[in-house]
Image 1: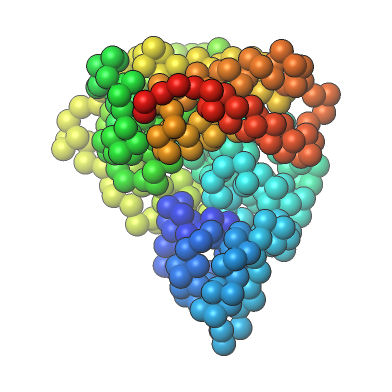
Image 2: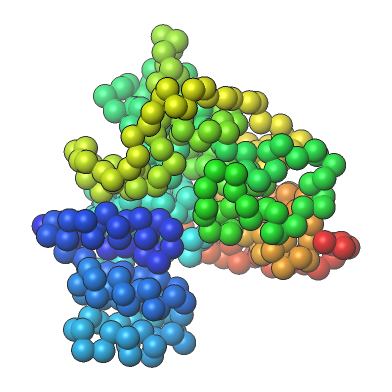
Length: 392
């Protein structure tokens, strides 16, 4: 029986993971489930999966969670420190689906136990890829990518010599504004940016899709996880979102990974790795699909892609700055304090300012250095946002 923990169990990735576990409960011993403010759902999941421990990251929600789990025998904890402590509990496999830089400390704690880390938290690799991979090697732990694009790349590389790879192509849906006239983007509202043309996701990731910041993060993630050079990594806009990634080899072959837009495939692949087991996902009907389209990304429309390449070239703590500034800029846009098009400007200005101050370099990356840099980048971003004049 595999011991598993799910961090971020009430989010979309967490819910999909819970769905797979609930289909074969006899195969799993659920150690920990963690969530945020939705303690109603967290308690439901914990009871259904008979978890040992349920943790909310918000201390003010602990009492409610305790009340909902009263008499169940399930232990309860709360707060960021409790999340990290829970990640150190022995488990064979841990899903890291906490959103944002907050997913880094528990991910590192799990790796230090030698746990297999199913990584859906792309910010961990963006902020501290060097630290994450070094920690995994030091403790003989395994990291399995759960982003659909990186899972696709990993699957295309099975049995291949990575030195024979010429290029990696990451696909992007293009988000809500892929067909908008450029001049209209300055007027885009949070509501408009929160509508995805292909599927329903959380608001933050949907807006990141519209701005292509999600794809910018994925480019950096590809560099950090697989070790490819920035020049080897490409992005193409693929409106159907059926090909998740392609790997090109030096003999001219191009291996494409296709599948439905269902995260349970990538999650299931990581959960059962190295086996392939039956998954409850749609089987593609190629005749019904008819055609697949591809477009070159317009960096005038999506300047976040350019910034990500600069971050990959700089490395060091640039990824931590990029992610922190992006998260603050996204908050500001959702609060209508800046325009949609101001988000990239905020991130770029923070990167330039902290580079001038020599704050992007580090001899050896540490968790403290990453967290401190994250904190300082958010302060810089807040200062820049405060000085922006906008009628957003």
